[in-house]
Length: 103
Image (tube, rainbow, N blue to C red):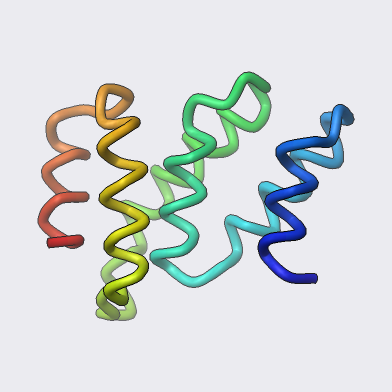
């Protein structure tokens, strides 16, 4: 299933279990795509998705540097855009790490 279709489902489906399962799928993408969705769902209206995103962010910080891959230019643009919108949700330390790796 294309990512765009999963995004459409998660943004339109009213059933919690469907949205949670879609988020789990998106959280299994590559390191930088995963981070994008973690940030996007960090303040989701559904508390279960918000908690899942918080847990995934903790895991991402512990594991992100194992592969030593850098984000592509397109991923950097997307990440910078979403971080600009959601910067207030994160600690100064978290924002510093994000900025360091996506510059």
